[in-house]
Length: 201
Image (cartoon, rainbow, N blue to C red; front, side, top):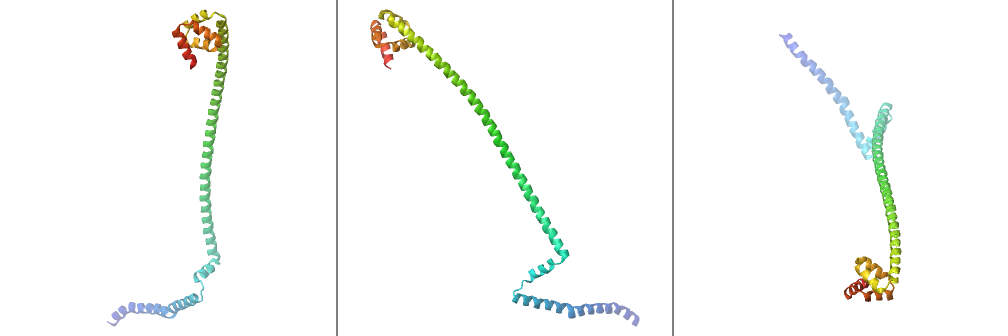
């Protein structure tokens, strides 16, 4: 029966030994270490020392950590550069599109200007033709007026009364005042009144 009790108490003894070692570690090393760290932190705070920054400085001087930090910084810089390059490429693409739009507008404007120049040339040619025609018409009317002025007032009045109103008005407006008076005198009173009113306008 003692053996049964020994077997049952053996695991308990092992547990108490391991528990005793952990308790001893806590009591002799870990608790004093935590206490010492707390006291040092309080002293550093009072002395106005930035413990976190000092820790970073100390860990930064460790080659492996320093190398990892440099790699992380390099990757971050590369990412920033890639983003910047992407943004610049997009900006270049937009500027190229704006340039293309401006060139298209200029080309359209040039085409429109060419059409306007051609149209202007046509209109100037038509104006020149109309001026020549007008000059020729004036010359012809001048010759007709000279002919009618040589005729007797009675004959001129009879022919002019049968003419188209516009043509008659052109002839009468070009005649000398004394010839016009003689022709109107030989017309019927109605025709003379009509042409006098038209000439007065």
